Length: 298
Image (cartoon, rainbow, N blue to C red; front, side):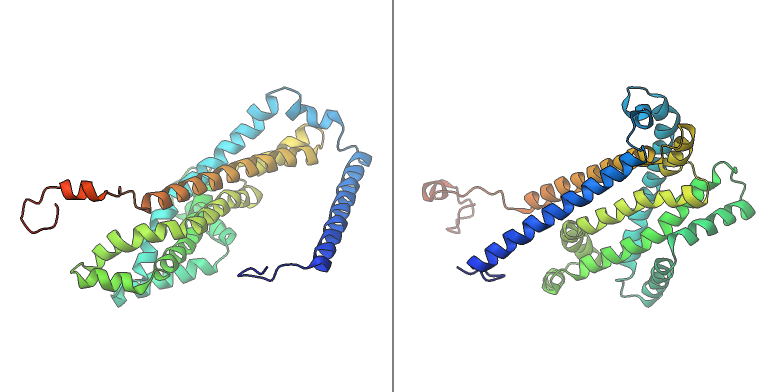
């Protein structure tokens, strides 16, 4: 039996794949054992190093982890709230028929998309220090948010533009043929469909925003989650592996929650697009009144 995508495997191919699977499993187990043995030889698995996080105490969380997590979520949330609508506006502007709208938007998007986000953060910190009266304690947060917004809004603009252009052109032509203006076509016809298509890429970019907040801690002394892990590991006796493992698990939990919510939302949007109309029987159709006398039930 064959598939649309590939030919069904024969007996020899099945045996070969089973052999590859066994070899890969053995190799993966060997690597896992080597990592475990190496950590154990360096005493990185001693309970004393993991006790601050797993021993029931709250000092490590209340002093280091929760404040760092709060700053990470604050910077990420502000960046998302600003970058999403800004990216949508820039993406729609690049689709404008007016040159004086399309060209400046294209220049802005291509410029900020080509600059590393870390450079934008450093530039933002210098800008706030020299030309504004922002408090020195708040400058790292402002700089991180500025860099994330400028870069990710440009990327989101391209996602929006590509999502709209991916729709069949006939939909726009049919909508304009019945008298809708271009703004109405975009708002009523194209955007609702494109949102579902763009959602996975948008969520991937939001995950990037959460992770890129760590750049502010590494360079701008922004007290986010990863920066707190450095201080925390030094305070508890150089338990670097334990500290960064805890932080990595928190990042995984945040991003997994974000992607899970996006998957749920995408499924809900797709279900709403499906027809929910009930099918009438012949008798129900015949019983439907015909007030206009056209022979067609109302």
